[in-house]
Structure formats: C-alpha cells, structure tokens
Image (tube, rainbow, N blue to C red):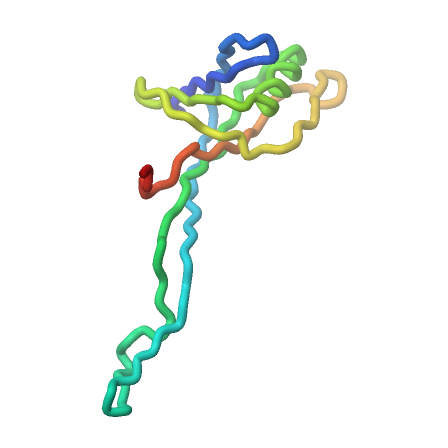
Length: 134
C-alpha cells in the first residue's frame, strides 16, 4: 500500500500531518443538467436516432477513502481536529493537492472497547474534474 500524508490546520492554527498507510478506494461521481429538445423537422417528420433527452454541463468529482494504520488512543483528538479543519491537503507523488473531508462524524475509539484502533476517513478533491475556473 502507498503511504499518503494528509496535512491540515489544527485548532492552534498550525499545520499537522496524519499518515494513512492502508487501503485506499477511489470513486468518481458525475453530475449534469438534462433537457428535452424538439426533434421534429419542418416537414413534420423526425429521426428516431436523434436524442430527444439531451444532457449538458457535465462535471464530476473524484473522492477516495483512506485507512489509518493502528494508532494510539491519543489520536482521537487529532482526527477530531482534522474533521473540523477548513483547510486540508494531501500529498500524492510529491504533489500537494487541496481536499475536503467528507466524513461528518467520528466515533472515538478506546483500547478498552476496541482493542486495536484504526480509522477510515472519506475525502474528496476540492475542485471539479473538468476545470471551469473563470
């Protein structure tokens, strides 16, 4: 498995790193607008091979799920701060990329109840797949 470094601004305003070393699962979601168009010709006929329902304004987002190695109970606060952070980056192939944390809740784990503590966190890139910066 490839290691991924996630950097975020913690509650003190300092940059803090968390390493994710286990399984990574990637996915893509797409979105578009749809409308129905007129396919009737001026003579009153129409071509059945034409699309009556047409899509436009296609875009998408890549997201991924990362897993931590086994960590100590003291990391609960670190993961809580990461979920609350407004600015998060991931380092992939020595390239720093902005991301957003999709995970909205955190069940704090303890060694007494959970024995081995490991977290799974969902992220998405902080930009669209098709760049439409104006």
